[in-house]
Image: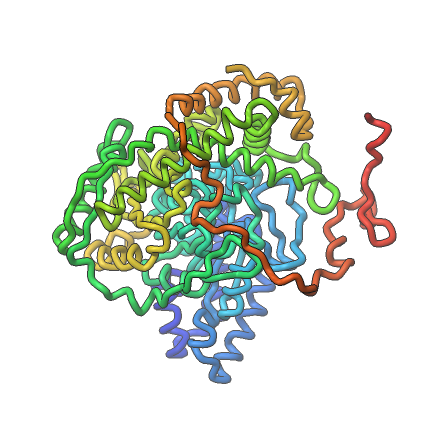
Length: 473
Length: 102
C-alpha cells in the first residue's frame, strides 16, 4: 500500500512505529496531486512549501515525544474545501471574486485541525460559494470524477471527494448546505458526515446560507470521520449558533452494537424518480443491517415533495444577503466577477426578499420549513434512524444539466430536507452500478445523534468492503 | 411567472448585459414557476423556522477583546491598477464617489 492511500488510523500507526515520517507521507500526497490534478482538477491551491514546513515541525515534535492525546493528527496531511479561511493561504470559495484573496485570520475548524498537528496540503475545488450539485459552477473549472472522467464528481465539495477517492490526500473537510458533502461522497465512493446544524463552528467559513450551512469531515473510513468530529465539534464563542452540547468521544463509543435498532424507510424516498440500480443497492444495505439485528419500519415524510421549493427560496435569499459584502472595496474583485449561478441565486433571493414578495416567498418557505422539521420529529418517534438515497441517480455526465438550472436543483431532492430539518446525516458508499459508477446511501438521525450514525456506519463498514475499492487511475 | 430581472439586478447591485438579462429572465421564471408550488401547502397557524436548533438570544459579556491590526484589515483592499499600491488612504479603504451618480 502506498503512503497516500492510508487512512488516518493507518497513517498514525505508521508514524508511531517510525515506519515513515510526516515529510515522506506529505511528499507522497503532493506527488500524487502533481500526477493527477491536471486531469481531475480537484485542487484550486496546493501549498507545498507551507506543508513541508509544518510536516518537518511535526517530525521534530514526534521525535521529542509529543503525545497523540495532545496532538491526535500530528503530521497527517489533509485538504479543505476552499471555503475555509486559512491565514496567508489563498481562499477563493471557487469564485473569481476572491481569486486573489488571502485571509488574515483562521476559520475555527482549520485552527482546531492545525492545533491537533495536521498538515494542510491544499484547498479543494468547489462550486462557487457552494452553489451547485456538480462542481461545474466553479469559476476554476469542473472537477472530474475519478471513476469516470466524463462524469461529474458531485457538488459542491466535489474537489474534496475526488481528492480523497483518488488518494491525493489522507482526509478532508467539506461543507454541506443542501447536500454538498453527501452528494460528492456518494458520487466518488467516499465517506462524509453532514453534522447537526451548530455541532461544528461556522466561524471563518465563507457563508452560503447561514441558517443551513453545516461543516463536516470527509474521509476514507467511518472511524476516521469519528476521530475528526471529536476534534472539530464543540462550542465556539465566535459562532453564536454553535451548540454548547458536549461533544462526545466519538471513536471510543464506536463499538456499541446496533441490535434492536429501528430503521425507517420513508415511502417518498423510494418512489418515482429513483434509479432502479440505486434503489437495489440501498435495499441491499437495509438487508445487511437487518441481518445485524435491525428492524425495518415503513414511515412517511409528507413534505418531501416541497423540499426543493423550500430550499431554493431560503438558500438563495440568505446567499443574496451574504454575498452583498462582496463590493470590491474591502476584499476581492467587484460584483461583475460573479459567475452565472451566483448571479442567478443572488437575483432569486433578492426577488424573494423584496417588498411585496417577502410574505409570499421567504416567510412562506420558513413556515414550510417548520413542517419539514416536524415531519422528521414525528418520524423519529417511530424509528431511530432513516435510511435513504443521496442522489436519485449515479453520477451524471459533465455538461448534461449545466444549462438547465432547475434540472440541476432537482438532484438535491433527498439531501436538502436534512438541512432544512437541521439533522445530521452520514453518507457512505454502498456499491456500484452496472456501468461501474459509485452509489451511496445516507443514514439520517435526530438532531445531535452523530454518535448513533457513526456506530451504524461502523457496523456496516465491517461487512461491506466496497468502500475499499479504488478507481483505476 | 415573470420576474423583472432588471429590477432585481438593480436591488442587488449586479451589473448585467442585455443578453444576460434575457437568459436569466427565462431561467428564473421557470424556477419561480416550480417554487410557486409552495402555495399548495397549508401553513395557517404554522410558525416560521429561522433557527433550527431552537437557540434564542445568544449573547456574550460586553467586554473588549483583541481585534485585527489595522494594516492586516487593509491588506485585501484592491490594487489601484498598474502598481502594487492598495486603494487605501490614511488607514482607511478608498471608495469610489457615489453621490454624483444619483
